[in-house]
Length: 381
Image 1 (cartoon, rainbow, N blue to C red):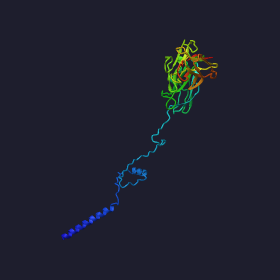
Image 2: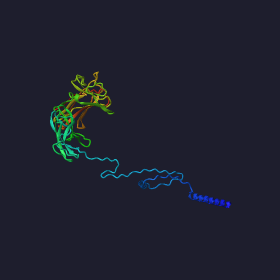
Image 3: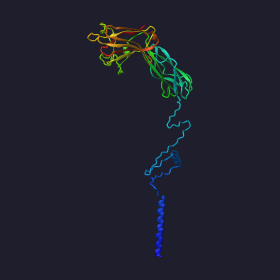
Image 4: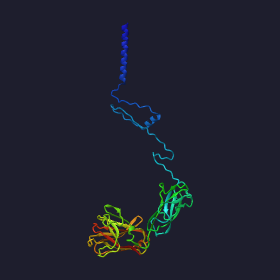
């Protein structure tokens, strides 16, 4: 009996072991499979978002251990009136902002005689969202005040989008030159504003000019001097510097020997920068050209210390500047040959223009012996 029980137990164990082998055999593939990395549970929203973004995952090779990385990007819905581009700036009109429309009177660089009274008028547009009331003012900001009041009130209400003319009385200063006056606006609370979002000022620039001739020698010290060369940037010069200055020389000399062999009166010496094709120029104060005006001069050279004429050779030039434009009036080539070259230009075609004359001397090749002089140089009637 005991033997029979042992036999039954053995049969049950064999059947159990065979069943286990069968189950294992059913779950064994014919080749190795990659190890799968499980994904942590995520919310239904996140799972839907990932499913919408992923279209296909390629089957990795048998030896590949799969690793999945993903980023969920939130989908933003723009507010009404807002751009859909992330980070795009938004702006709204300012309460106070102006737009320059035009100069109604006194275009920039208008010429006036010293002490002349004039009225400058600007046309502006209200580009803000607030009404400009008579408590708003245009006030002097910086520059040359030219005897103007501190501020001028706006004469009426100016609604957004409307245009107004604002005028300021001024007086031209007593000395020749260029003068610039800048103005801004402020409201009833003294909040300052101007043209555009950067609050730029409106401005006027005038030229105070002489009207009864121009002596280039006596006014040379008040001119603006500079020199340069083709391969060098120009530099500013000090008038009256030493005659051996390698940057060039502009000065008044007297009782010096000219190439004619005679002693001079006061002449304007101009030596170019000590470079091939070096040059030097003087920019004079504004002048109002009148009918019948002439430019007159005699040009030539000083002699060398040993009394010889030397190898000087230059181009004398007369130009004028009107606004930002420079125009040539004439050029005269001159070698040191024992005589001065007379120059006479009729300026009548420029009558009524306010200009700045420019005297220039340019080396014609080497700088050697280029002791160039302007003698009796002036504007005459």
